Length: 562
Ligand code: DON
Image 1 (cartoon, rainbow, N blue to C red):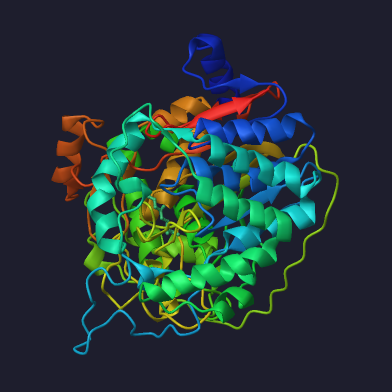
Image 2 (image 1 turned 180 degrees about the vertical axis):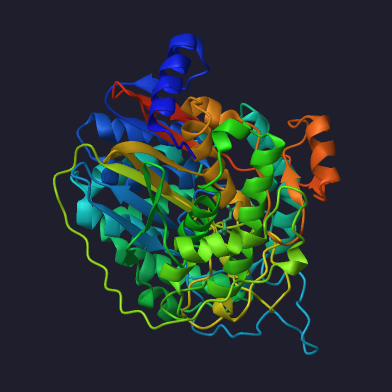
């Protein structure tokens, strides 16, 4: 927390005099616009759209498709996502195009007759696939806010798919690593079972044809047309339960984002069925009373405060959060100062709290009658923050060669059985149990930050359960520790999620003395299991209104702008 405005002002001036931005590690700086994503090809397509007069929403739709071509690891039309936006006039909103459970899904569908979770059933192959929302998401955004013709949005990705995408070093390693799983999930070997080396070009003609049909026939092609039929046949032939009715019934939801204040920042983030906004609000409200800037970046005290807040927020997540169309979430109470101050009352700098002593907090669940409403205004100055996923790396690993894309394994984001962790080690209960047409709880945290009523930052990241804490640390790095956007993205990250009771740290990034001090206070440190925590892509509005991109070097991420 920055308590004294004068101190803040002085400190900022001091830092900016002592450390002018030109001499610091900054990302791309541009004057007008910028697109930052996991692949330069997608950032270029987004930037081209903006250059030719399209708005951020046109670019959002075009980049979702471009990532489906250029970044099959996670980019998709076989998955879903969330978009948070802020328009130039200050209007904010969000779109939920998250996958849904198929109509034939049941609470115990991943359990054997003895009630045990069947390994890999919710993560690998056709049974793990949720009803995809991405194509509906693209069309919803374009219909509502887009300004360019749909050809301009889809054509660049069709061209890219025919032309092909060059394999990067990181991609070569990823493809190789997951090849055994591709063989396991698919009846035949797939495009990605070939030996692909850095510098090779992978062409995607089947995906190009699917996108051409979508261009010709619109959203219905994917949800009711020939593509829908071919997709359902493929999934069923592979033992899945998804039907044509599932696709035909899929709808996106425009939702009110979760908003809260932290010092002079207004944070706008995704509301349920993502846990991102609520957890971020909980953690930031719990840590606000502490002098993090004085404690220092990644100091013992800062790590303690943040860890203890994370522990408590993730405990609540596992109990209270799920699809708001199916469960009552006491949203306002969960992010209220009174409740959260009380949650932190058991924290002491002397000793780590033990996760087994921290259950979810005690909150009275009340009926909520919220209605969602959004308005449309002129486009320029809009900011958009989108996180999209097929869940695991290459999703379910099930690749529809006929249509040219991977299917998600988002069903694993449900709680298959209370108390049993999913692939991110997250535990859930009834609020996130499986029901037909329910959306699985997400941690995706597309976020926009305002400062003094103006756009300040837009950011987000992949990383499963570590998404929320990576977004948190990036905001704090800029706000509390005066980093540039790029420095904030680069800085080593740590993560705690209540259970398992450990602080995960990026390896070889934290000082051994610091680790020793934390261990002495009772914290368990795990530097093994997360070689990378998050891959944050953000844009910061600088004092002179220039834009600074932060593209994460942990991936092949790139900022492009003008
Ligand atoms: O929605 C979620 O929270 C997860 N399906 C996100 C998965 C993810 O970030 C994978 N990336 N590492």
